[in-house]
Length: 145
Image (cartoon, rainbow, N blue to C red; front, side, top):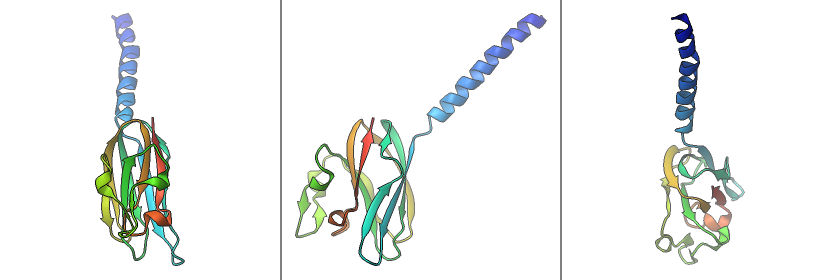
């Protein structure tokens, strides 16, 4: 009897290790997005990671601005990040020409939100589409593998 109970311990240990691995594996990767503008007019959109695995990805989006709304939009894009379709008069990316865009609009100053999106493999462009912000360098690239 003692021998069979000893045989169970390694099996239980393996089962627990697999369960723990599955629990960790089920947590999606996270990316922190920082949206900023400074008094000198300089704006930026930064990503804490520029490569993530395909599937659900959790984004924590922080508008660090003291006085401006910002957005976090993301679109699969193979071209240059600066070549999204753009309406110069409105000073915005033409969202109706983007077919798979997701994101969070109109984050107030000092607001932080978390959003989860399911991303397929490819290259993505993340950008702020408040008027003028995209052309002021609020753009970044994300690779999904």
